[in-house]
Image (cartoon, rainbow, N blue to C red):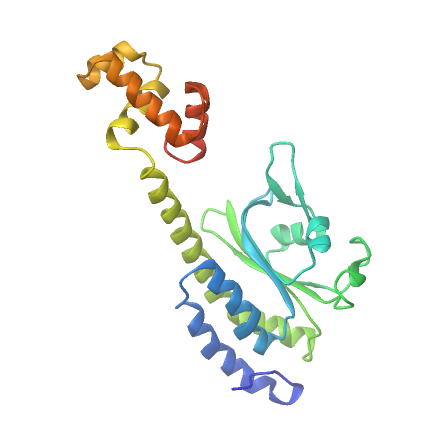
Amino acid sequence: MNLRVTKNNYASNKITIVDVMDKCLQLDSMVDLGEFIKNDLASVVQNDMAMFGIVELPSFKLISFTNVGYPKSFINNIIEQNPMGEYVIVWSFIRQWAQEKKTLYTNELSNISSGSNLLNNKTSFIYTGLQGITGERASFFGFSGNFSNSIEQTIELVNLALPNLHRALIDQHLKSTNKKERLNKQILTKREMGIIRFIYQGFGYKEIAQKEEISINTVRSHMQNILLKLRVSNKTQALAKAVKLGLL
């Protein structure tokens, strides 16, 4: 079924996009969401490139990010790594959204490292998203393309899709996070988890042995297994790795 939008069938596509977005809530992974935006949504909105993810506000630190077709050189000019190793959106146009909280549009990309040349002369850029209840995080979606409808009509189509896009993104992010946490917790046994928690709390081997009712040598043996499983060489590194993995 050909869903390409033209100026003559814009009204019918307002209905079509509602049908298309029903599929959005049936996806199984973040990869599926990317493919959906690349194919199904693009068949209506006519975006050739897209990006989406989750940011913390007001810093715009990336929690999740997926690029669907933008050149790496373009992405590198709107996202930077800060001294703490975190990736942050730095493009002022996007950060403007945090203040206005509405769908934004620009066709002025010349200030972004040769702009339109990076995007093969597809200079139209639409940015939108939804904030969470607390306002501390937000979903975001960016689209570029040679939109055949007026920009107002294209923005309306994007806004019709936004609630389902937001819900699908949050669902897939939570699913991915929960899966990662489950995998991390499977790294160490229940006994090993207990020991590393005691070490994290500042207890020594003798105290841990008494609390666990095992010998000091057994504690040392468990600690060696922990080091091997976490692929580190000492307790300090083990604690840092456990925190990073969400075990502590």
